[in-house]
Amino acid sequence: MVERSEHHRNYYRASSLLELERCEESLAATEAEAANNLDRVRTVAAHRVAAEAGLNRSDGFRNRLSEFLLLPLSEVDYLTRDGMAKLFALLWRHVEEMSEDDSLRQGFIDRVLAAGLAPD
Image (cartoon, rainbow, N blue to C red; front, side, top):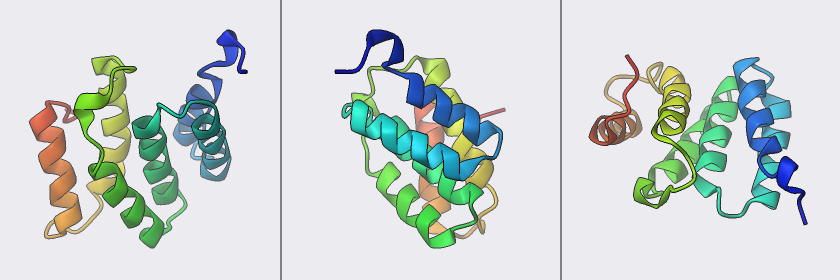
């Protein structure tokens, strides 16, 4: 059983490592988070998308983004609005580099706008 003080440690570690562009380490922390917190599917998926993008793995990025877009946001009850906004801003940085006519890019943008979570 995970100690209460360590319950979200890997989530914050993965987030921080992404900000530092240490994507391999972030993926390891993300997988540890997935193993310890099975109900954190959406945040784990978002971290995987960002890490794949940071590692310049185009196919992995696209596959992970497709998976992420299939997850209903209405089921996220463990993040604040600010937490959701930070996750989407993290992904936005990578998605905006995609071709403007890319349907996956448009699907992400549509979701972000519909959720009211588009970064400034």
